[in-house]
Image 1 (cartoon, one colour):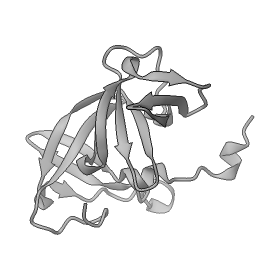
Image 2 (image 1 turned 60 degrees about the horizontal axis):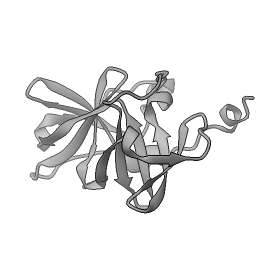
Image 3 (image 1 turned 90 degrees about the vertical axis):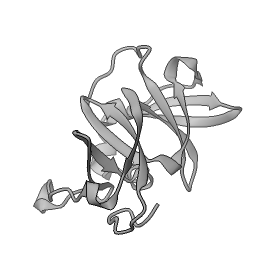
Image 4 (image 1 turned 45 degrees about the horizontal axis):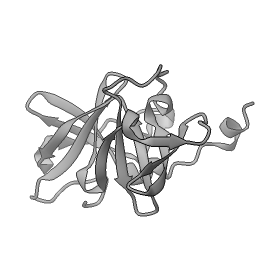
Length: 160
């Protein structure tokens, strides 16, 4: 994928779209290794706050990050639509639990708009790429490499 904050090339880009908490997101399709249903994964180890334990996928032990918890939704037991996106990142292979995968969407540079500044001091997190718009759909585009490398502030980790 090109520079994660700007898309000036003429080649369209493919994003895997998925839902979390009623919003639709997109990540670089090239980072997706496979899609699995959460119920189909052999899972073991204790769950944490966001880390949903570890699982075995094709003989590889992978951590599971429950994005439903990370985004502030409080999931009950997984339903048949709960999907796991197996990601092949530059540093690891991992699973990302989402409400559901909605498909693959191809976007040209003209269909990706920058997100307005938001948050503290009007700065948006650097893992948000922009807003993809195509055929009436709007996706929040996420740089998954940057998102998965975000460190929580020490104060938030020490809450007992």
